[in-house]
Length: 497
RNA sequence: GCCCCCAUCGUCUAGAGGCCCAGGACGCCACCCUUUCAAGGUGGAGAUCACCGGUUCGAAUCCGGUUGGGGGUACCA
Image (tube, rainbow, N blue to C red; front, top):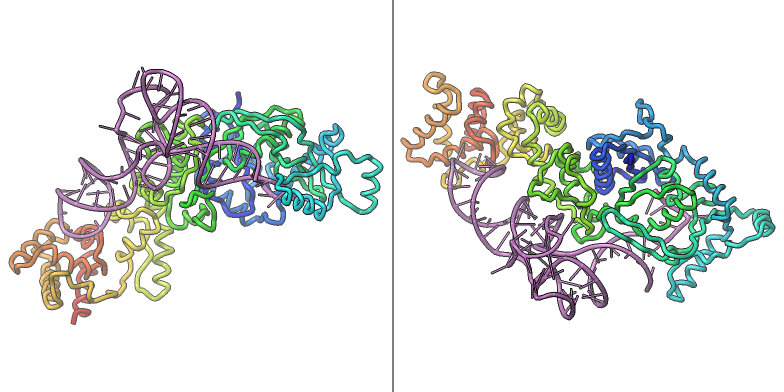
């Protein structure tokens, strides 16, 4: 069987973590089975859709590496695939046509009920403690009656006849699911009075037209699936296989939402999470390999992915775990790759400080390469880079003189220690400016003065970097260079006076 | 309300009748490494497998019920 599956986001908001996870599972499934991964934009909610959101979604998916085989034209890129167009608003005619067919076959009918009437029905049902459902007032309207109502200026919606009985299907992750059609809320509106189609209709018409073989989506669609199956059948097409993924949850175990969690993929990206980390984390939300391994590149995920191993209970989005996984991937990235990703982040972060008046410069590739081993295991996100290595490029004044003085020392000892260290570092002859000789010379000096080496090092560390937590001190000094090291010691001495 | 789904450490999960008085990972704690911070290594705390019944020689695993949680229920997607 040819696997064809799709992600069908609605551009009514920025790319959501949940959408990204659904896209990933569809992508993995398609790749695993040599199938086709399709992107379709469900933009029929014109009021809430926007091009900004559309761009955010497309960019986000592409950034994550979830590239689609078929999809709409984007920017200068042409549409791909033979089942287009891939924007629903460009497929309006096909929904209209499908609705006409259902109408002519008596599987759907025009409904002239006003919003007020429907609201009254609902209120009555609520009062009677009944499930809200369309009562079917227009289900048997004669042609004459319809003409009369139309003459009154009323514009009908089109409703699909739900019918009676039971709908059952075998969900790939949940097994058999059965629902009584009486629980479906009555006959379903498929076309608004303005002629535009509604989601439950477009999704089915398009999945049928695009020959989707597997519908892989969030559990929030599980209850709606019987409606879709009924529609597929009415249209006379094959019903695809369904796989309903567990929801991604807020910490309080409700469906992950903007109000309670950071849901925008772009926000994570802006914080310096990398695609490898996010993809890995998302894959582990609801799926597990069955082995003890947890760190997977996308190629490995493709190799191992199996819908049968998808969990059926919801998964809380654990940011701590994402950070750990992200750190794993930052450490695994090839050096050149990490440098390339760090560059723009540093340009932005340091650029902002420079613009604020701090003397310094924005690093280039060759500046970063030698520094990489010093910082790569110290950042969990790219966004931490400015903090961890900014002092290499910025000459910020010492924020707090008290920081300069190690715990067991006083200001006088600190100044003395710095002067001694300066003396050693300043003389080119006895000490080459390399980590090893610097370390042994300073250790020796500490011993002759009766200081703990750690105290001396801490004073020097803060003097040279402005902070108490840094990469290894001597490598740091070497990277800084003799001149800048001495200048900073002088500045620190000045602060201590 | 009604319908559907779900239920193993705080979190993500392994577990498809005996290998489990439940394994791994994140987080947490301790120790090691160490000039700081990390990373890494080792160890530890942490789950009466929601509860109650049943099936079985034997249940986290199968069945029923209860409770709890979630989702759905639009001229939203």
